[in-house]
Length: 143
Image 1 (cartoon, rainbow, N blue to C red):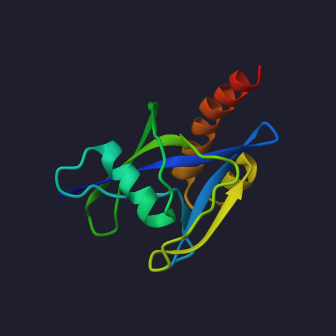
Image 2 (cartoon, one colour):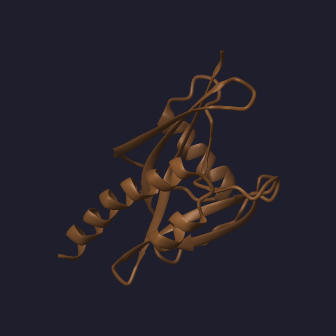
Image 3 (cartoon, rainbow, N blue to C red):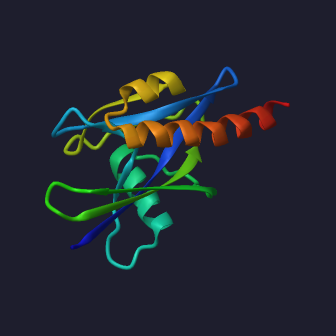
């Protein structure tokens, strides 16, 4: 069995003291998820996350690697998938330029909307965990 490793981030912006989360819709399915992709060559997880976010959205971000979450699941092809996600805050007025070949739509969502929009239950659970970390960070910034 082969393990496929991917990395990305829960990208967010703060508007009116509340985080909004960036979700991407796949160009080849109805899948909504986070900016992420496969590790290439000798990249570490942070390098992969930065490259994938840049490729899919044209955003140059800084990762907050003090938050790290993982998902593990089996793929229909029999391979094991390992997904690593960090968090990254971007300016509220940032512009997304989606990679049309892979991404059909993008959107900024409050946490409840993001959870509803995400396709898979493991992503919904991860979104809730990331939001706890991010909401505490945003609250600390506004105190």
